[in-house]
Length: 500
Ligand SMILES: Cc1cc2nc3c(=O)[nH]c(=O)nc-3n(C[C@H](O)[C@H](O)[C@H](O)COP(=O)(O)OP(=O)(O)OC[C@H]3O[C@@H](n4cnc5c(N)ncnc54)[C@H](O)[C@@H]3O)c2cc1C
Image (cartoon, protein in one colour):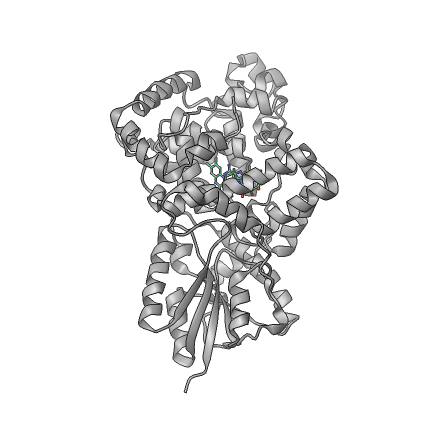
């Protein structure tokens, strides 16, 4: 007879603390296979980038270190998860699979549906714990906020590793080293990126709450300063090195210990947004592909490959836009306002469908979280219907948030010598100035690919006219009922900071 085992299936929950599936598996008592699968189908999906998997691997390595000190084993495989379960089944009888609920992209959703069928057909019980403050199957928003706050105040799910028994499956499963190229790329050193793992996550958390938070609200919109004064916790949340509850409870303690109440509450409100957006995606995952409000389906449908290539490479001729793109490509991080500006430049100024740029940025963001990324992208693109339409003027943003051009010059060396008064609109330089500052527009640095003022005026009229159309208004009623809680002012316009 085959020995019975449980499986703890790790996904976007790469930590050993506040971990309900681990806690449940320990309580259930059977020896367990602690498993992470690098799934080729997910690795090859349009939103996937090696930077994500490098972060995942670093997180797993840190877990492995702790587990080894308890003589425990973490199995890391390079294979589809069902294939892995089948191999395990050849030698063991799987009783339970413990995991967190994943609110992921289409391919992970399809895979989860297949796992459900597999479990049903093989008499395996799949126990999925909720992820952070998101409610599976929520039909209306009425109770979301109440549930979220209650969840945040629950005790952490303690994990007593002393009581955990893991099984080493030896040669049974395919290791990641079988794909040499992939293994090499995810183990390569990349010092520009935040490193993955629980220890680093806690280091960022503590340094933020004890020091960096002091300038948080004041500098949140600045492309340069925000890199230090924002928490930088997003990749640790996206890949589950920390839970929202752990951060929330540590933040409340920090208020009592260090003060900084205003800034910490400002931060806590964003932890709520994190789940608020993911809840939208949980409720309607077609947001990955389709306009939330189908009233926008008729406009902005033609792709322009030249515009797209310029935007993707950071060669639009608008210095702040280009600096932001080059920065996020090199480091995986950008603050909220600059992300919004990149999207509105694509959708409002270049008049491109949001779908044409959504994967490019997903691949650049180290913190790529489908449940935030797609709703935010649509919100900035103006296709939700229920939000105010915002257009970020790239010249004004530049003057307001990088007045001396320090961020711009860091990422676009060709603009190095240009003085403050010309850095935001280098195309205004005379021939003599271009020679003097060694930057010939159209050769050393791109000439603007569009006229921002004309483009924004066209976008404003088209988007507002569409927004007022019967189809959009009709669809808004449904969207408001499903995705927002008007009574508690929980709609997205209230969630936004005022970006005038
Ligand atoms: C087009 C677009 C795409 C985005 N894609 C992602 C994404 O894939 N993953 C992601 O984590 N964030 C995304 N964001 C939201 C936001 O920009 C980042 O969460 C934030 O910049 C991360 O930096 P931080 O951790 O220093 O944030 P802080 O300001 O320190 O905030 C703390 C945490 O709150 C949450 N948070 C903050 N702002 C938002 C927001 N506007 N919406 C939802 N949650 C928020 C994040 O989990 C963040 O880590 C996107 C925003 C836009 C405009």
